[in-house]
Amino acid sequence: MSRRVNYAIRFAIAAIAGIILFCFGIKGVVTGILPSTDLYDTDWTTLKSGQHIEVYLDFVLEPFEITTDTKNNNDVSAIYTVPDLQISDTDGRIYMKHFIGVRANARDFSVYDKIVDASWKWWEDTSGSTELGDSGFKYINGSLKKMSSKERGFLESYLKDAGYTNEEINEMIIPYVLVENGSFGRNIGFVGAGALMTILFGIISVVLFMKREQ
Image (cartoon, rainbow, N blue to C red; front, side, top):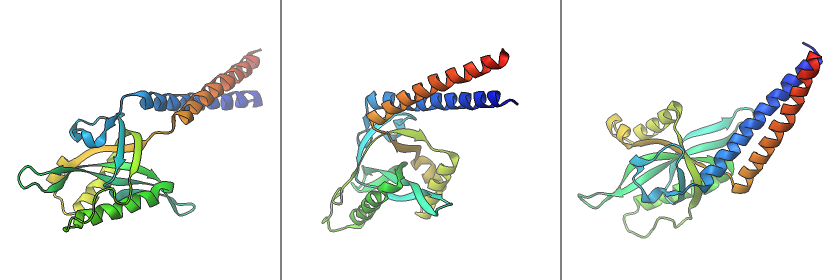
């Protein structure tokens, strides 16, 4: 293979990467302008993949999956457990009806861990001296992603350890992960950068291939 052809292939790959970046940015822009749903004000059984969600998370439990950078031995992301709190019609008690996940980057671990501690403190408090949100909340403007089979398996294991039966778990899991959207400006940047890469590298690769034929 000649050097010119080799370069042409590389530029073509770069152009394809530009297309992917462009599509990623477009998806973020479109999701951001779609009407949002308040997670705490909707029936979780009606949630759908790709749905635009806004929520002030004030009740979160431990992560059921943690991703680690094996090279540096650092945790880089985690999926925390988000319960759907409901009031029982029979005795008026609050219970956890459904569960989804929320993805967090390492920079937000301290925020989520603080909410987890406060959530358990409120859940186990019988005196009524604590309230949800006492230790803050996490605002999320994001979209729902379908859980992979691996992610669902981790959530199932977490709930089994909590004492739920397989039948209960199948009814309780809403198989989505809430993923925070990038800012509108960042998504526009992705669109611009992707378009520029596609046009520039696409033209270069075409020119190189045409020269090869001469």
